[in-house]
Image 1 (cartoon, one colour):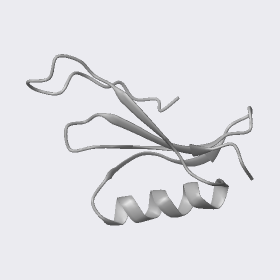
Image 2: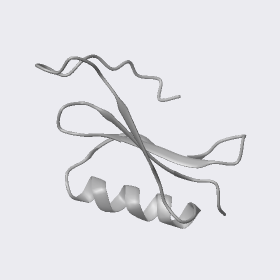
Image 3: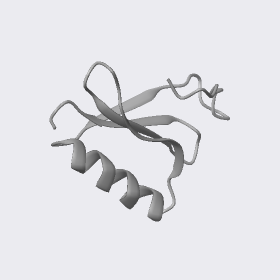
Image 4: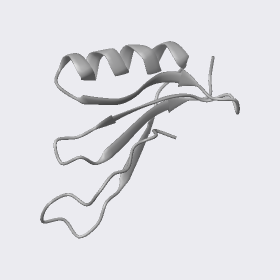
Length: 73
């Protein structure tokens, strides 16, 4: 979905994704803006997917993928 490939973080035996659910679409957008303003690396800006989920992706300092999303408008 992100159009980017992700590799293993140094000294970690694997790669993972964390998916965090928030209350609604507006919370996806505001949470993305907040964490990016605090230094998170944006990977995919908020988008509403055809299946009804508003989602976005950031990465942590080790390059692990973190999704923030909601199915509630």
